[in-house]
Image (cartoon, rainbow, N blue to C red):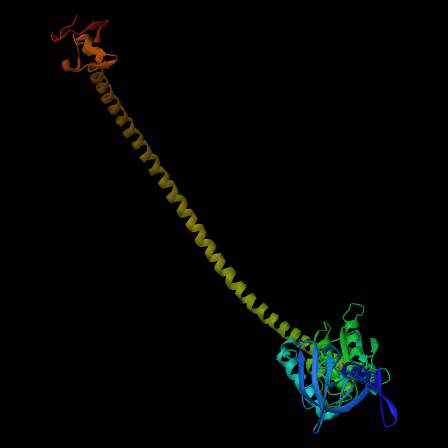
Length: 424
């Protein structure tokens, strides 16, 4: 490295590259924490985050990785950035490589809350149609809370006063500050992993500022509540407090104490309801028995009267039936006699018809036999055939044709002569 004398001392001469390296070595030895207002917030390739940190006219560039930074950052938020300063070789631009970003002040948290709320609402996470009915008498209850919190103590006190004898599974979590979001998300993962027999999950903590309740407004917590296969009651803060976890839960309650009153019924009140129901049912049954007894008595009286009339009507009907049977028997005998007489007449007529038909057939048979070929041959006729086919015309014969001539007593062959049409 070259040195020059400046005011009696040796001063090194840097190249641009070496000077930037030297500067980064000096300023990058430890992290810095800078507070300011976000400006020009931009996400590139869904991974890299660029924004300015400004205060009045002063402005500095920041660079970070998206998954390392909190969700909901927008222009105008006041934040506290922790990171490492450096000067870029190519541009010579000074910036901070961001490690963490912490939102500062109610305004920034409120803005992040509203943006995340709007996003989740558009995705349908708050829809009432998807919210499930809580079990009426759960035996095992999962609780996500801090075991040292007053919210957990109040919840357990109310639970034991109202019912008692339940299986309680507490998943201890941080409810604010670093690690709170991860703890709550892990608690939901445990209860939904099949390792727990919880029938309902209660997510609870006491009241506080919006910064205190920030973990319950985190998108990851809201999605963990939404993704739970077990119904969720959310009792976070006081009556005026609200969180995104409240909106996503199957039931939102104003306070942890209120959560205890809803997750199980009051044993004494339930006993009173059961006693009242039993008394009402007993009175109803007794009244029904008395009414049915009177109704049966009325029905028996009516039935007795009806039976007397019915028996009388039946006796009259029996007499008419016997009379009809006797009449029918006489008519059947008369009909049988008539049918027998008609049958004899029909048989006689058929016999006469058959005899006449037989005589006619005999006459037809004799006539047909008289007209038969054998009878005709006996009267001096003959049949001429050529190759088995009868010859009915002289024109059909040619000279030299062999023919068969059938007489009454046999058949002879002959040949036709040319032109003369005579037989040899």
